[in-house]
Image 1: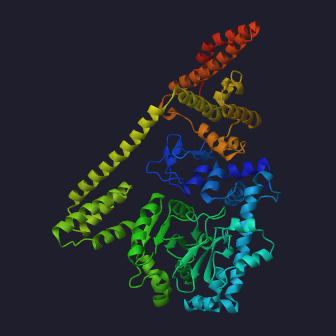
Image 2: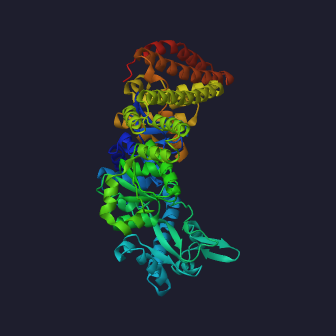
Image 3: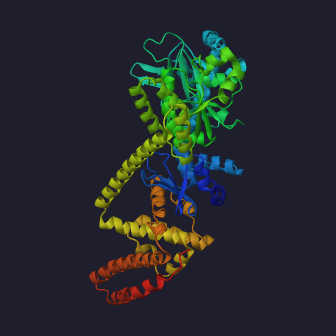
Length: 599
């Protein structure tokens, strides 16, 4: 959609990037930036940085960067215009109806085609469930205690007994084979085309807006040579590790927590019982991306995984993932039943609500699991338990929580509090030293690999950042520097955008400058440039001014040297004379710039 620059700017400026990113990432202030663990790659040391003044972000680990639109595009796997719509909704802005922008047509058309196919497929599955062919599947759902309303709310369906029923249905609706290939719903081979799902109960998987992005299917017959549960393959519309089952309903809950279950039926049974805050990861392993998306809707999670060995192991894996994104975690005990579906069928919703109130915090659950693996009456086994318990406590970042857990654990497990505290501190110190050593090794490696041209590029990028951040810096150099003084084309374009932004609006906004670059790769590089503040947060104002003057001096001197060499090659005496005079004046310019106040 070709929205005007004014509308795009209104949406962007109405969504502070620190506030938006904070719903997905735990940020801590560090100098002029906010830092945290990158949501786009796994890391232990935060290299993800957000600048409120520039309204941009940058990960110095994986290289991803951009403005608030870029962040939403990547974290939610949506197009630019979808991110615009999401942020407009967040800010309470009504967007005008517009025509689609051709720049985004190709990718958006593929995604919209898949969405239409999924919608028509869901309709086909829905009616097949109510056909004579789907009678046994419908009876399976009702015997599991699901009402007609619940079946409708979740759009449950049935893939027929024939392996090409959906294919024929969609071909009759006019879809091409290429469109059907893009959907991932079919297997194309020399023997013909086969539906991915057949003779299965179908669970449509929806995104936060209620759009069908994929399907899950439970086989009706004996799963001899086929998996009991099967998910759609990943497509342009669906990434398994990012989607959360039930999010389209749970996001509207008034509860202050989410219930995190394992499977489709658990979520559906919980919703039918009145727990409209239930969601599930697609599979037994929760991912960082899913945890970060949950963080976008709530600060608290109650894990309600299966009450068996696999479920408990999955809960142990999920706890640190959820905590790392800033979620408070509790674990629900469903004994004597295996899962929420079975529990509610036998004891009802009121008893389940009591279990929610009695849910233990993540640490107590971890400690309880440790206790199950050790005989606390045996001295050797008890010693191993004490050491492992100390390791678990040492992983708690919050100092107050760590102190409280030391006190509670010492009392509960008959451990001397001072001994436990000493052990926790020693383990924590060792962990910190290992982490610092890894960071130091990485920094040393980067230093060894650093080349003179890299240092020069760093200086140029820092200068561009200063010009964008400080109007005083811009005013001081606008008659001195031109885009041609930069040797790299992208640096020229960024400088030109900064100058034009000042001339047009009286200020330069990094997020607005990024929008001038259509290519996604270029936008990331621009974010990289505009987040290059060097070590400016750690030096005095006088040192900042001197560095600024040195950067301008070096850039201008190198540009003049290129021109002087060119003038000499072409024997342009008048031009050469003027260039040499300009070069001789550079020292005076440097002294003048060293007194510029950098706001």
